[in-house]
Image (cartoon, rainbow, N blue to C red; front, side, top):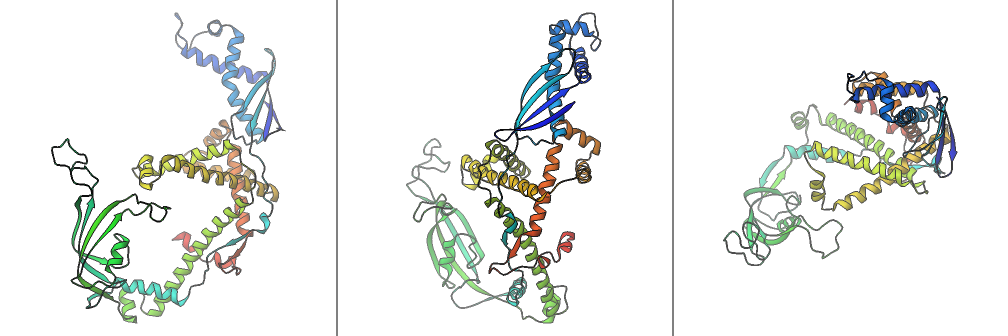
Length: 476
């Protein structure tokens, strides 16, 4: 087989393919073997039906040849894609241009490919990452969190403030709509319908220990508890679930109205232990406060370096996408959208949840979810095209040795032999896709190594500092 590729208008490529007579004969033999197993002819066992009989059943030798070509063309097309390293994004339009019953067969396949986009300015990208410095105040805050785990609650005779723990008796009564019954509908059960907005006890807790300012129940509870003393009782209305995200002020919430009655039984203050070497040895594996603080500072630096590297990648991707002004092909967006929906369904399945349940939990409609995923799909397609453009501009390529290494890794992940993986990819015409994905990954690594890094104040950030401790974090 010989295949050549030539560009066409509209981001398309024309593959011109010539098949040798021997290849056509091989395709004919494959069809004959398949039909011989399937055709039932009196006097012949399955698999033993002669070719002349099969030809007669199919309507003659020409009809059998047509059937062989119809079945074999997808495989020949896939091979042509691999040989020419074309990266198609849609189904091809195939046209047989020459079919000599005694000679070669020629066909053309016109297929859409990814367009080229402009990424002018990619060499001067500036990405902001979080500051990496760890201050004494940062360490103090972590020490205080550790102290809080060993602190002692002491009852105090004063009004409650944020950070205090209060012991409560709390009762919440949910309001029901007019005409509702205990079974959710008026009538039918024989019970008398409730009056409009009649409350019904739903939440009751005694001796409930609550941290003021934590927002653990409803925001209104914290407002009521600030300044409350032991013996005080507060009654207020709130909405479980709160206003829908993005709602305007005064807009009715999606949650259910509840009347709360709260009785404050005690106000307690969390008294933290003194920061001494003795406390440090009891609360940690370190003998002294200095050793503990040094460890906290180092851990904070590692965490911030990890966060900065994540911000570096995300910021680089976002900055690169901003350079793409062209509209992207709808076929690529729809393919990316299908992939994202599939990934979401797969993740939800592992959590024992259907996508309609997830939609209900997020408070959005299914169409709103799809629209959000489509917007992210557009960004994903732009990033894909931009990385390919960077690879083209920088002459980034993937050699056969790198491709072989990737196939070895794929085979190990799939538990297959590398020869099987290669054959499957070649059969489906997906080997060029593997190479292009590696090429994009190399382009991203090049960008991550070359973009300018600054902190929130615009000060340069050392890439060496950013990468400090990376090996240790990976091993952990």
